[in-house]
Length: 256
Image 1 (cartoon, rainbow, N blue to C red):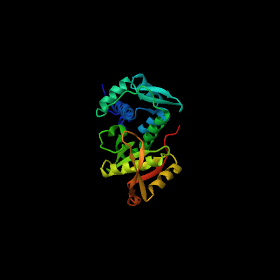
Image 2 (cartoon, rainbow, N blue to C red):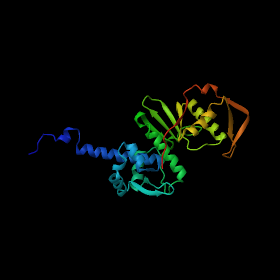
Image 3 (cartoon, rainbow, N blue to C red):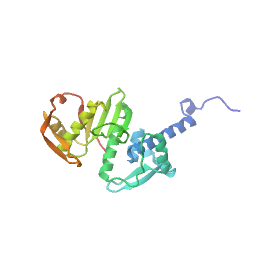
Image 4 (cartoon, rainbow, N blue to C red):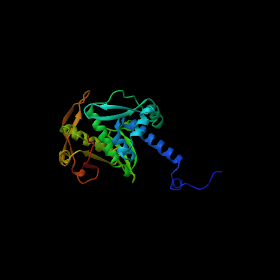
């Protein structure tokens, strides 16, 4: 005869069904994350899931054995990098039907990989305040001058672009990036942009350029990616300096 008496675990809200649901949610979160970013590592994914980094070995082995993920050692950074396996790719197509997902057979250059992982860290650092995440891959439909690394919608409804800068671009590219974001803000693609840097020295270099009262304008040469100075036109940036449209932050990025 079955008893209606609940066990302490069940009474505390735990049940096999709930455990299965939580496991399914974890798997879906990992697949969606890899669909967005192509690659990640155990530490970053654990942080995204909000679980201990050292306690997920069995979980990742199960995903790998099931064909949901693949594991590959990345040259130069001594980390195991996870990507979508065959089953994971098919699952990602179901979870993210709006994306034109493509199989990635090779790891990108480690510089690109570090940049991608740093974008992931920037998003994870803000997860408690985020309502929705749209990485660059999901933004192809925007009629934007330049796509940011991600657009996040905060819980207060504000749409914020994230731009991770790990090294110093030349002057032409920096001002081109500034003006591109300003156009995107005016086009209501988002309401502000946060530039994220791995150290305060790099942050100051960008901020010093931003604080100039008059910005040079560089235009892309037709049929080329080269930026050429517009000698007839400049941009008066003084009205931006006291606004909240641009923010420059030095914070922890991806660490090897």
